[in-house]
Length: 451
Ligand code: UDP
Image (cartoon, rainbow, N blue to C red; front, side):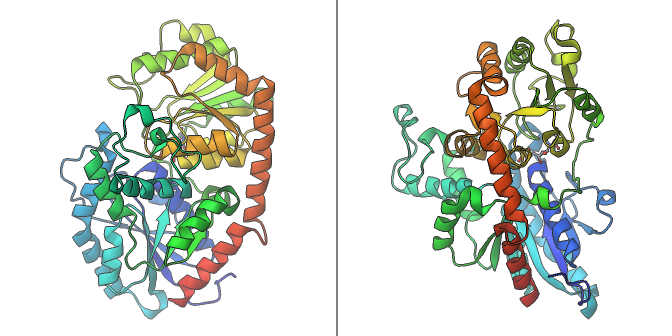
């Protein structure tokens, strides 16, 4: 249902200031704007979104109150914890001001906040506004996170090394080692944070960037335990395909290079916006790519190599050896890359956005999860949807070369590619007329309009 002829309702979105969270929130904003809602994005100054990329939105910068944060050292969990401690009062003040100025023509219908920006829920309640949560990780990750709390209470974790390969009862295909622990915080702190982030108090609904056909039984299980309706309306990037919310400048020159490569031949390599590696791992990837003889497009993000700055970090002789066969960028237009005909495989850290983008491109994956939900996603990619293979041991050039050849040229990879195409078609059906995501989106809009 389009709302163009009706009184516009304003939605206030509160994204978490990291790329993997900003993207789905702004995509959601684009979708809801296309349905007739006005959109205000309340954001931190740190990693602030670019207003000129979203001329239809209003932006509400929250005054920066962050103490010396350590997001650059990768301590993201602590950083988000600090955000919650520091932004509540500011958000309350800014939102109250907006409400004072609003007319009946432009009233705020609700606050939609990233699940980790939970101070927004409290502020919405104080200002008597309804609120809705956006979850940007998979449903399986949510279930695994709540299992950490339960397993801890039952005394199963911390677990001994000898149990790390054991399957967790009721959580197939996850093993203890796949649980989404953080490398950044102690178990005690993680448990405290998870119980805060997963506990909904007053919000009216949950929007999920996932698809019913991908996570049907997991979503059903969560819905059974949940008091409020869940709306799996993903993949958001596919529904809001035109918008870009990149914090780094995308180097689109790689698309012209891809145009010159043959169909399905290129392995795309990227580990997202947060993961990092050391020089040794970088060298192993470099020589694995070089020795595979396969064309490759590789994103080497500035700051992602511990103790070093960009391209000079590549091993001596690597560029001469690979020549025109390889293309390296600091940041790629990833959605376009994964939708390009020349790309036949994705060597990925398995962030949830990257996973969805790969599925939508019908691209099988080599999974190299680094931390948190990436391990859960990698297990689903390799064991449930069977559209990828996982590199579990220390990165070694020989194993990387072998994995690339398995994925890109061998029968096993061909079969994964066929399954990936089938998955892609299922996802396309879900966002089409009568599809599950489309239906959920319509129901979500009904709820928002009833506020
Ligand atoms: N991305 C991009 N260009 C790149 C690498 C990543 O635009 O060179 C985007 C990617 O399309 C995805 C997001 O950054 O939407 C990364 O999110 P994800 O959940 O995959 O991983 P995270 O960065 O949160 O670990």
